[in-house]
Amino acid sequence: MVEPVDVERCLRDPKTYEDMILRIFTTRRQRGLAFAEADHGVTYFDTVTGRRSLSQAIARSIAEGRYQPQPVGLWFLETKGKRRAAHMPSFTDHVVGAALYQLLTRNARCYGLPGVYSYLPGVTNVSAMRALAAFVRDHRQRVGPHGPPLYVLQSDFEKYGDTLPIGPHAPLWPLVRTVAGLGTPGGEVSPTTWNLITALARPVIEDEDGALFTRLCGLTMGTPIVPVLSNLAVSQMDRAILDFDGIFYARYNDDFVLAHPDLDAIQAADARIDSLMSDIGVKRKITKECRTALSGSGMPCVTDAAYRGGNRIDCLGLSVSHAGTVTVGPHRLRRFMNRIATRIDGAAASLEDLTVHQRAEYLVATTNVMLDLTSSFAVPGLAPLLETTTDRGVLKDLDFRIARKIVQAATRQPGVRGFRQVRPRMLYEHMGLTSLVCTRNRQP
Image 1 (cartoon, rainbow, N blue to C red):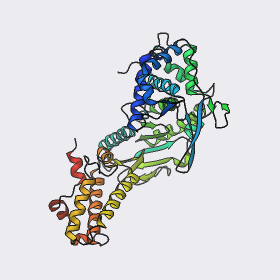
Image 2: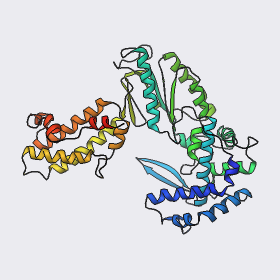
Image 3: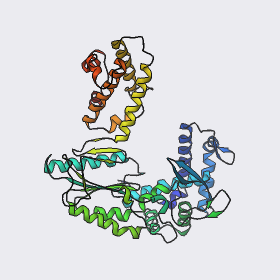
Image 4: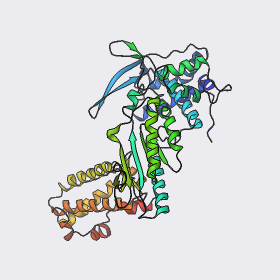
């Protein structure tokens, strides 16, 4: 069991920062940035070679109450048509903030983060969907394969990171203060330590014109402490949802999913969430909400039209079927298959002078390299696909589509007509085409 740590004592310990500097350097080195500038002409290599003296200086200044975080730089990141604000702290602030993130996360786990799967050691989005799949399987065992549906609600928050209240009187701060004081002898951190925490969590921002300001709403994305704040900010909602007996709940940052076999119970939980939004200071994103009556028949709910019929739940990049099996999401399956098809087409272009069977043999050999986990030329996405997928039907479908693509490229015939010349049995038994189903079955 994880025990809380004394945040004040750890912040005054040079070993805390020495470990963090080494971890930051290791990450940068893996990205080929070992000799990139960390801050004011100092490289990351310089910081790791002088980490002992730097750590002692940081710890001493914090112990004496002299440490003052510097304003963070503001810049904008444009991805997928969206423009997001990002922030760049100084290297020492990054080290202290990252260390504080580790300490607060440990204490937050002791305090309790029920249903939360984001930014925590040992859990991921895959963990959340596997938990949902287990809940679905338990439901199916109780009611049978043709029993009543499981009601599932998927939702998230409207611009969670940009609108979360972080002003001096925001509801987030009492919770952060409680978490920070869990491991201290008196149960509360000193005013000096608390001021340091708030200065790193809500830093002064310097824009490109040199103007200084502090946010009242919106997390300072890019600073190390943000993940633990986003995990704690709606913990009141997390606990309120799990007060309902027999409910499943999982949240990954701003995305959350609920499931319950009783329609009245999930409707009550839905109303409870709405009643808490104003207290927390966030809003639900209505346009992205999805309500599903999950069953093998895919029939909608007859008493609540909002719960549309479905035989799978797509959430957090994965899919959970009505039987409780897991696979990667449809968009990831399409991307995986498109990559294989593109490589097969590229290889087929150089095989014009060969016979149909010779072309098929070469394409099978090429495809086997793509489907070899140990190969440097394995198609991207293969390892996550095999690791997360328990739905053998999905893997069988991929096997068929890969075989069909090979035959189409070898025979230059559309659809499945090429199987008249090159049969599936010939591909697998005589030419040795790798099967994703067999590969998955051999894994533990």
